[in-house]
Length: 369
Picture 1: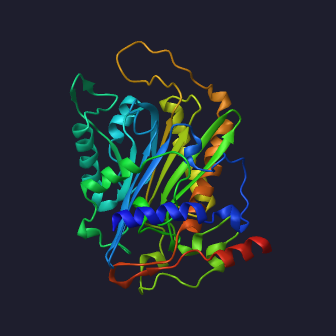
Picture 2: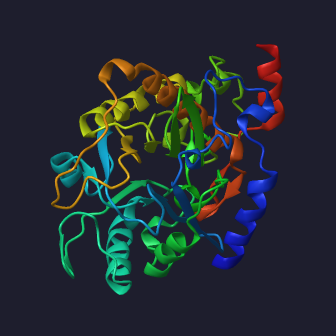
């Protein structure tokens, strides 16, 4: 079943419409693929789990330098609202280095995904770029989550170690599947079907790429390119009476930002904060029930900041960061909309059904406004 799901994902990548195909206008200059993989070296993998009427979940993984190069990168993170989980952030904050991929899943599978990644390291004689001494190491990987319990039987604990390994094995550059894939399989965004979305921007000689797992917001809040889409499309709200998706901004969003600009950890923390503004452009106010956690890394300084040798690094002056900030805000906004445009209507656990953002209605609204 899993192999089938992955094969279907490969087909969807080629045929999938994206926000720009529907006439949505965004600011900024996207990269060739308009994806996080426009940042050279970045690889993305998904395992998508859809089975029966209960299983709607999965795993997504982002390797900063590809799965064959675990050298650490400079990194930083930011919590806009902490009703969520992102492991490994204490060491990221302390060291300023990201020495693992970013793994994303559902709320109750964080432990499984974390442990499974460490087991993969041990079985394959791999080790993180920090906290390793010869054959001895300890790992503090970054694993983040959003809650898919409306469409997925989240307490069924369907994500297993082999699913993490499949996501790792599938990681590659190039086009990135969006919508109902990977960790985003069972997610709801602004009362529409959500999931994985990506976008990129050129910032002079540099590139910024973003990947989101979008599961946040209330329908009434949704804005796309300044148009109050959520107020104008009210049909198809999640069916269960009293559902929190009818009235609250909750559910969470994970935003991963990659760049090839030579930024160090404090600058990347500044970059992670700017994701807030891209999220706000789509309408969310980061409600009490939402875990809005953002992480940024730089693939520059290719020798890696780890090890014990003296390092000479490049660093972009703070006075030259404004284009990077602009690119981040723009790419986050588009990635969120791409997540909804790429998603398809889904029925899952307990018969709950979430409709996709209707492409025809969105196209007409964009033409009108």
